[in-house]
Structures are given as structure tokens and as C-alpha cells.
Amino acid sequence: MPTLHYRLTLDEPALLTSLYGEPNSSVSYPYVPGATMRGALIGALLRQGKAINPAADPDQRLFFSGATRFLNAYVVDPVKDMRTLPCPLSWVREKHLLTQSESDQALAVYDLVYGRPDGQTKGVRGFATTAGREASLVQVERRLNVHTERPRSGGGEGTVYRYDALERGQSFRGMILCAAEDATELTSLLTGMETVMLGGARSAGYGRATIDDVFLAENDSEPVIDAGPVILTLLSDAILRDAGGQVQPSLAALLYVLNLHGSSLSAADVEAYFLDTTIVGGFNRKWNLPLPQSPSLAMGSVVVLRHGTVSQAAAESWLRAGIGERREDGFGEVAVNWQRGRSIGRSKLTSWRSPSPLFWSWLTAQRSCGIASSRAEPPRLRSWNMQQSFPTSATASKAISPAQVLLA
Image 1 (tube, rainbow, N blue to C red):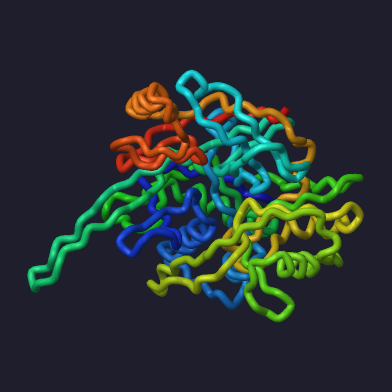
Image 2 (image 1 turned 60 degrees about the vertical axis):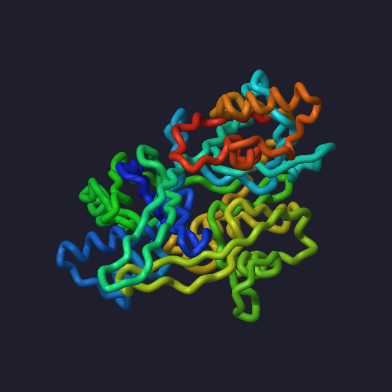
């Protein structure tokens, strides 16, 4: 199947609002959803004066049937210039309290698919690229802005609200899986859209991005089904329906959807699983209305299937067609045996943003009194989030170098 690759570079902060946050705030996804690019291409056609008929080809095949899949655009690894992928939920690391001299030292990262280590662990979140036994973790930069809405002349009260947006200057790489007869038209559309507006608050200085590095390649990658177990990893959220037609983010619904592609899996074929759930929605700018909200399995979820239960044809169908609903919007992207060969081992976190000097001065004072603890709260600082490896701040975050993780 032909695959159209492209790169998005944010010229302005982007507010691709998720369902999280309080009523007076908008929190952006840490990636560019495939639905956003699908809507941008439809908008480009409408601006050219072309009528779109969702019930007939080629428009139905291009945008509405799921035959063309607009995969999510994930942050680019700045070293390798590659599209990252969500970290599997089976990746964990050891808990420990860093010192300033230890900020570039080794951390232990494990894959629970191959067993559970001793001691306390916590999840590794974010996005990563892999090459052999090496993985590079990349944190997405964000910007927090506070806005005010003045009261109208007719009365009423003003409002203070917050935008948690993607920082400008970042690059994201996305892919479009399409039929051979549609590849030329989609390539022409993307190359003609040098500048695109994404997300909300566009009149307030958000959403402008540049599209470049557009190229077409044949997706000839095949899943490797060998003597070991089959590891299925969700690379995007998946909206699943069970045998009764109900939306269920569960293992049973996942197995039922996988069996629609020619397999015959049961709960007895599952050796291990690491699942999380989330709520997904969306917004239709044509209707100016939100899309229905649905519970889904979260990206990064992992299922380990017993050897001999998955055929090569079924695995190829999962990769080519995706699973679940709204696949045209990037949902249901999977990887097969992406984590193979990464046994439990020591890992290094060699580069990341060090905490502020205020944190280190507070930590030194605490240790001098003999009461240093990772559970203590430093004065005039927000909570120290060890999972994200950098302190939260009400100001705009700056560039964070990718963390190099060497899986021994």
C-alpha cells in the first residue's frame, strides 16, 4: 500500500484540544491527530471550489470510508529526523531521587513483557524511536498561556481561562495510507498546502504550521511472526465494539475485533497484557459541533499472544487496515513485534533538562537537615513530577533534549 509521508513544523503554538482539563482551560493533545490533517485536506478542496460527495467515490474512498487512513503525526526525533511512536505501557523504570551530579547518569528501564524487576518502578511515558537495542525518548514541548475575556458592554462578568498548547518550532511527522489510484491526488494536495491552520484559537495566534518534506513510498514492511510470542502494541487510541455492538475498551472487545481479520483468538491465548483506557472525541468544523465521545483503549497498550495463535495474513491485515472504528482519523494503528529483542536490562538517560537551581538549593537544605524525601514539597515550586523528568511551570517550557535510552 502506498504511504504518503509529510512533516509539520509549528510556526505558532497549536491548540489541538483534548477532553482533559477544567471548564476554563483547554489542553492540547501531545501530537497532531490524523483527523486534523484529514479536515485540513477537505478544507483545501472546498476552498478550490470543488464539491465533495461523501456517498460516492472518489470522495468517499479518500476521506470517509476508512480506505485512506490519516495516521497521527507524532513529534520528530531531532537527532534521527524520524517519526517517534508512543512508549509502550509495559516500559517502566526504577524510582530514585536524583541528585544534581546524577542528572546524566544511568537509570534502569525495563520491559515488563519479559518479566518484572525487583523494587519499585513507574511507567515511562512519552514518545520514542528505536534502532536495534537502542531507543531515544523525546518529550513534547508545551506552552501555557493565560487569557482573559473582558465583560461585554451589556453587562456580565469577565472570564480567565488557560491554554495548554504545543510549543511553536516543533516538528511532527505523519503518514497517510492510501490506494495507489489516490496517491497522486493526495500528494498534489499536500505539496500545494505550504501553510496550514490547525486546531482552535486561530484568530488568537495559534495553529499556523508549515508542511514540507512530502514524499511517497511503498509500505512494504511485513510483521515478523517467528518462534516467539506475538506482541501487539497500539500506536494510537483504538475505539472497539464487542460482539454485542457496544463500545468497550476491554481485552474481550480487542480480541473480538482482532478476530474479524481472520484470527481465532481467545482469552486463553493471551500470555500478558498492559492496557489503559481514555476518552476520545473530536470537533467537526463544518457542523461547528463536537463529535460523540467514546471510551477507547489508550495508545501504548500491549497484548502478548501465545506463539502459533496468529497467522501471517492476520498480522498483515492488522497493519494494513488497522482495527476498530474511525480508522480514517488515525485510530486503531498497531504494531506487531515492535518490542521484540528488548529484554530486561540497564538503560541510560543521558540527556534531559536539569531542574532549576531553586530545586537543587532546596534539596541541599533538606539533606543537610537529614529530611530529604522524594515526597516532600519544595517551597515556591509546583510538584516535582519524576515521571516527566522535569518540573511543571506556569511559564512556557523551553526545548528539552531527547533522552537516549540504551536497552542493554
